Length: 401
Image 1: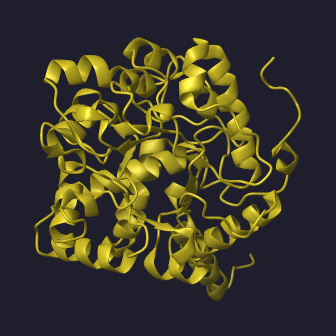
Image 2 (image 1 turned 180 degrees about the horizontal axis):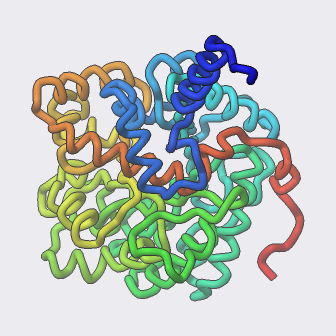
């Protein structure tokens, strides 16, 4: 009877051990969402977790920066483009270059690229530009707004971008506010109806989907962002980024309804407002960000700051950045739109965690939410954009019929 040589048995054992070691639940799309999140979280260092919470501007980003600092997100600020009159292919190549840096890290967690697309893909050359929200609100036509959302999603995806900072669901209560054109209406019920754009951008949420959990329907859709939470359109005398003086009942009945509907529709992210409510900066308002949005409304996506939003917690801005980091993260903000001084932010947050100023549980809550959105939208399976949708940019096809 032939006997298998001992060294061959040894090779089989080693091969089996290597195969088991290489299998990672978080990379297996057949596994439940929460199992994938838990597996990846258990593998992550503090440095990797804080990197996920950091969003930087494309002007300071590179593949090397993405890799060295484990950056979780990149954005284009207003007018920030890879080149003048950049083509869809140029955008895709830039986004993919950043993504390759993120994928080259130890765990290969993909970054998410975001851009303002508030009336069409408005930062991009040759994109279709739609009316501002004030004009769309005047149509009283939620289905039209939904179709505009779907057309915008296609054009954003055509440039390799999977995330938009839209819609703005502000309720403008004073026409002196310089951003009233970003509001669908002074009527909260009309603003509520116009949240159909969330379904246009992200796709229709399945009937059995649990309330508050983010949803993105695939590679022709984008993650949306309801903004600016909350009361941005109600500031005294319409002064931008100022103080909204109103009772809790007034805040919830006038400025909150759009968020109720957006969350029900599976909106992926919520952006916090520069403004204050009764003297408390929204970027530092634990009661409204964690207490109400996360705990009462059961929002399960991630909360993102506005551009340098935590800096503006102090007056003048950035006067005490260490405090701003503590206040913003403690309030419940999960991802910080830094966007330029990322080393200062990462060092400051790391110090707060190591000194137990900010508990690890708060970091884990933030990262879990960010990963939930990334897994849900399929970024782990399809992190790199391709040219399959480039013809959708500025398409003459009428999606609005």
